[in-house]
Image 1 (cartoon, rainbow, N blue to C red):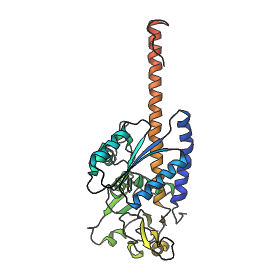
Image 2 (image 1 turned 120 degrees about the horizontal axis):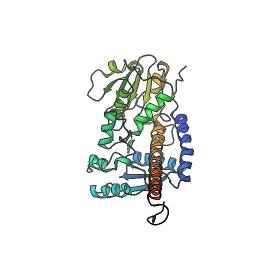
Image 3 (image 1 turned 180 degrees about the vertical axis):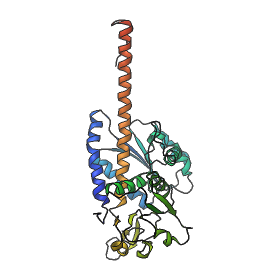
Image 4 (image 1 turned 90 degrees about the vertical axis):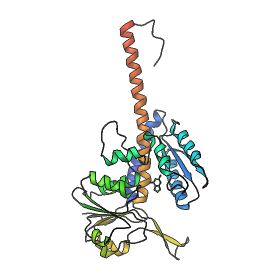
Length: 324
Ligand code: GUN
């Protein structure tokens, strides 16, 4: 039987725990996974997200190289930081926290992050690889973290995707668009709704899987959904609440209490998609650090082979003036 609450906190912990031995193995090989973070401006939400990411890095033993720049930073200053991180071998993945201030050309910044360090999968070529479902050995398979986290939540809760009608509310480059592609590649029938969609409730009522990622507080109500739908709520909104010390509580784009009895399963807010985004980010850092280890082993094997070839050709003695 399907559990009605999809526990993102527990699932993300399982994934994070699975990273621990992988990080240990990297360290045995003198590689410490490193995450470069660029945060521009004073947005409280972005600062909170970055602090959460840094805390999880610390807990896992991933080094974070964070740079905080003021709101009025120039494009060339951010670009210089990106280039510096691109060429730092201790940094395996680079995260530019979005949104960037309005005067910054976000597209150019993201496309200057090295393809191999594009931990968020936001580079146009990585999005292109995702759109084309490129699985070849030369394709960098880095997908945006939140959409990948949503797929993990479904998979790890044994929720079938193939053949299902997945409706996504929201078409952002960070969530809605890449998630639509991932679901499509898993053979779902995908509909994307957005701010100009007419009769949105008529469409959401057809969903077997409904993803809400539009940033509208508790927009989806009981009469918007069909019985047994699986809801993945990506929204994180502040709802005024005088009973709370800080004066508000976090809620999603779905009215959780209103829909609860009608759904097959649902992610809570907080404790659903949020922790998954961070743990997928950590998984990507580890994957990229493992790639560096793989390259190191390949180089060693190549050097050993060259050494052996020279011995076979010249024998031991002259001509062997390099080491492995
Ligand atoms: N801002 C909101 N979500 C994200 C994300 O997943 N990555 C980055 N870099 N910025 C974000």
